[in-house]
Structures are given as C-alpha cells and as structure tokens.
Picture 1 (cartoon, rainbow, N blue to C red):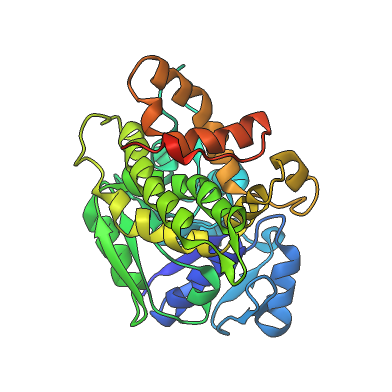
Picture 2: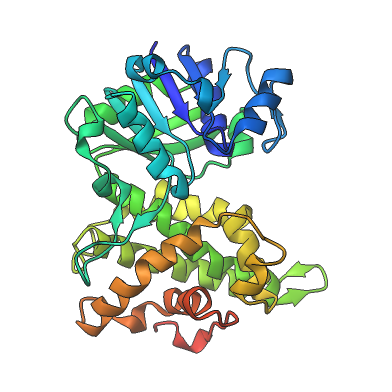
Length: 351
C-alpha cells in the first residue's frame, strides 16, 4: 500500500484512481484550478461528469485550493494527470510543497520544443527537472491502449510502465496492477513518451479517413487501413529521431507495441484527436474547427505537431530524416501549421 496523489481530475487522472484504489492504496484525487466543477460533482455523488461513471467512495476528491502541502510532501507516488498546458502548474505546485516523491508518474502526454535550434523536441521524460523525484530515475511514464472511461468501468486493458531504472516501473506495477489493469514494464521511457505523444498527432491524419471516404454503410476501410499502417511506420521513424537514434531500425520496438501501435488503434477509435481528424476529413480547416465545433477543446495532437514542425523541417534539410518517408506527417503539418484542408496523396506513400 502507498500514499498516492493524482494531480488533475480530468478523465485519465480520475480513471487511473480506480485501479489505484482497488489495489489497496490511499488515493487523493486533486483537481487543477480548472477542475473545481468536477471535484464538486464527485463530492456530491461520486459520479465523474466527463467520464459518466461512478468512482469508488475510497477516492478522496480535493479542490486545488484545499490541497495542503503536507499531503503532497507525504505522498509516495505523485501522478501528473493534467493535460500538457497544465504541466507548468503541476511542477510549480510540487515545488511549492517541496514534494519529492519516490516515484513521479506521467499521464500527461506531449512534446516540448528543444531550445537547441534544429534539435529534436523533448519528451517530458527529458524536459522535467530530475530534482522532482527523491530517487534517481524516479520518473515513470505510462503508455498504451487505455480509454479512460473503460478503465473507470473496470474493463480489461494492458499498458506499459517505463522508467530508465526499470525496477521503479516494476515497483509501480506492484502498487497499481489489478486483475483487469494489466501492466508490462520497459526501460525505454523516452520511446514510450515519444510514442504516447506522437500517436495523438498521427491519429489526426488517420482519423480523417473516417469521413474522407464514405460508403452507404459507413467509412471505407481500405484507406483507413493504409494510413494506419503508414502512421505506425512514421511513428517508429519519429520516435527513433527523438531518441537520437535515427539510423537504428531496432531502436524503437516500442512503436510496434502497446505504447505505439496499440495506443494509436484506440485513439483513432475516439477522443479529441480523432474528432478533429474527422472534421478535417470532411474538408474543414483547423482554424474553422477550433473556432467552431471544437472551440475551447484542448487537442494535444495539435500541440505535438507544432512542437515537431521546426526541428523536423531542419532535420529533413540536413538529411537526418527523409521527408519522402514521412508523407502522412507532412500532410498533417500542412493542416496544423498552414491551416490548409487535409489532403493525403496516396501516391506519395513509399513503395
């Protein structure tokens, strides 16, 4: 049993609280400054309004304003469950409480533009200060196919916990694994974090196929399958680049495992990135969607694409990467950075 504090009461942070409690831990679910309405709803009837699911009574929901420093400082495990725009708040909150848990766990997914011109973007595994953990390499990343509502409902899934010091990932598995929340471990935290961010970005282009090619009984399957396959290939290329191993084909088996291909599969099936892709497949531009049907919605794949763009262009100009191997990536970037309608020329897919 451990004392666990989850920072962020959004869908995934809240869903992760379910197996954490079922495994016998003491769990505090602390909302961000934007989560007061969620915390208040949970306090009233245990039903999470965004998950449309009841959470166990043993989970203690707390408003950000009511979270005391002592609770944070005493936690064995702290989970960063905020979206990428909230990571700065979470880090500052930890520092203010002088909290240095044995294990700091990343649910937040995204990339951070590198301050070195032309260098690959950083995952949070590299961007976050090491001083946030009490133990060396105490950061553990979570990746894999895990829809938040299904997790909250107790449906089976299998994910990956990754840490540079694998025993830390194994220790967290011992604390969180249940009969239905099954966990593999890895020492490839950068690969897991890169794939977890990149699949949101690549999902946008794959999901466009759900509306770009229609049949009377739904979407066409062939173009969707073709782009799903291409997305996994590009996921591996980009993850190797981010790991600074662009010429080692075996460097990122993670891309073909739970945190890559598996997570891409469920992300295309639903969520904000998939929803955006469907609008783009219908012919809308990014600006029109984010100022219309998805106004006020955080789409992390958009932030990931923008963090990629400049360094990716430089890497292709320097022949570190080959643009011809990344047709889907550049088709998505044209939407995100130039506000063009999504266009995928299948003739550009590599032979």
